[in-house]
Each structure stands twice: as structure tokens, then as C-alpha cells.
Length: 352
Image 1 (cartoon, rainbow, N blue to C red):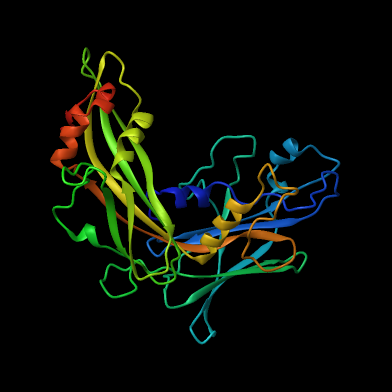
Image 2: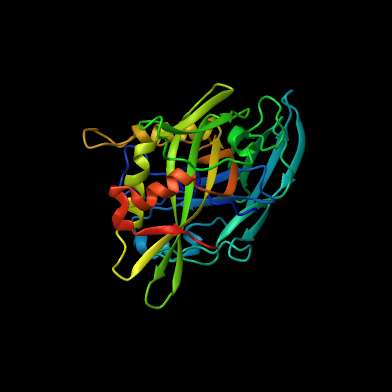
């Protein structure tokens, strides 16, 4: 899998999955509920599908069950992905192998749940954005079958209509500019061409800086992600913008005032633009609408899985990015002289 830093979409889709549905009975007998999660990305060389079971047992402690891998993993599953063309014909089928994500280089974070094993199902076929992909999960012990289907977002680097293109990234002189003397209330804007099958978009700027101890000359590198823009778009071309004035409050809240013995040197930026399919857009809409202090019941979250007692999300995403983008000269001057950020003690540009 190609490791690409993510933004909100990446965070949203790797943290929490499914909450409880309405009419939840805390004293219900044990019931098996399948939870599936997978995101297909053309840039990845391998795709991992997580399939687990939710658990509730009135005779056992939930904390004790959380430490037992058998409470979360099925003993025997047949997991496969079918590739389907525009004529709705299955043109390929691959049986997925179960792997331990820790051995694959993705260890599980420490917590109340068990850490090993850390299973997922691995898919290594090349994705074709002209086709759809159907995930089929069969429990070979019970015969129960669940499925979900998604389109794929093109991540090709061509300039044909419908491809995922960030127009500014073509420019060799592209800089991050949050100061414009002619437009004090202006916007920082990224212009895009929307890829086919995409509905939700988010932009992330990753800032890098160095803290230097003025007594020891010891240097420590830092970075922080700013989710600066996003939304749902259906047009072929659009812009993601943020008010330039929001740049300084973000830095102040993120970097915090420098200690007495620290001075700072700003480094370049990385920009990531994420796109996701309709399923992710709908999932987010359900998340935003669910619950609330004024609600009279817990609302069910969105799932695009079909079957009995199954929840989850199977979708696609893509990312375009440009690394080591310099700040404009005007922005660098402002970072050192603007009264709102003097407490950050930014003294110049990092030399590495």
C-alpha cells in the first residue's frame, strides 16, 4: 500500500466505523453483527478490507470481550471482490486472502482492545475506474452472505475531462500565498477538475517548521495539518477556497507561543486534495444528522452493505498532492512581522 498522508477524509474513514442503531437493548442476548470497512484507491498497490463482528453478550463483560480476538473475528469467511463492467457483467473475481496487518506494516494502536491478531483481507488487483467493484462476504459456517458495491475514482495523471486534476500543481512557480496587498480580504484558492465518480472533496495543507533552542542550537522538527476547505461538488470544475484571514488564527492555535529559549523557522508546505465517492458523502450526511441533544432517539448510521445484521462502508477515494511548496515572499515577511503572530517567534526559513 502506498503510504500517503491524509486529511479529514482519511481520518474520518480510518477512525470510527459504526455506532449503535435505534431501539438498542443493553440486555439483549448475544447477537452476531458483521461490520465491514474498505476504501479502494487506484494509487495503492494493495487494498485492505477490514471485516469484524460487533458483539453484545448479557452474560459477559464488554471490556473482557474486547480483549478476546475471538469476540471480533470470524473463524471462517469466504471474501471476494467481483469486477463488473458497464453492461453489469462480472468480468473478474478474486478471492481475498486474510493477512495480519501488523505483519503488513500497519500495527494496531494500543488500547483496551486486543492488539494481536490484527486481521484484514488483502486485494492486489489493478483497479479500472470504468468498472464497479462488488465485495462479497460469506460466512462458511452459517451460509450468510453480505455484499457492498462501489465505483472507483480515477487517479490518472492525464488532462482528459473527468480526470482528477489540480490546475495549480502544474505550475512550477506555485507558492502558498496568504498575503495579497491588493486583496486584504482575499481567498487562498485551489482550482480542480472533478474526477468521475467523485462527490466529496477535502483539501489539507501540511505545515512544517523547526523549533531551535537558542542556547544549545538543538533543533526539533514539527508539522501540522490544516483541513482548509471541503464540500460536495458535482460540476466538472470547481474551486476550494479559504479566507486568508483564517491562516493566522490557525497557526497561533497550532504552534502556540514559543518558549523563551525557542525561536522558529518555517519550512515548506505540502498540499493534499482528497476525493471520495457518493457512499462517503452519504455516510457523512448521516453522521451530521444523527443524534443531538434535542433528538428523541438514536438514529441509525448509513451503511451501503446489503444483508442481514451487517453494517459498514465500502467505497473509493483518491488523492492528488504536491510536496515541498514554498511560501510566497510576502507570506514569509508577514509570518515574521504581523502583530498577531509575533508570539510565535518565527525568524525566517529553515535551511533544510
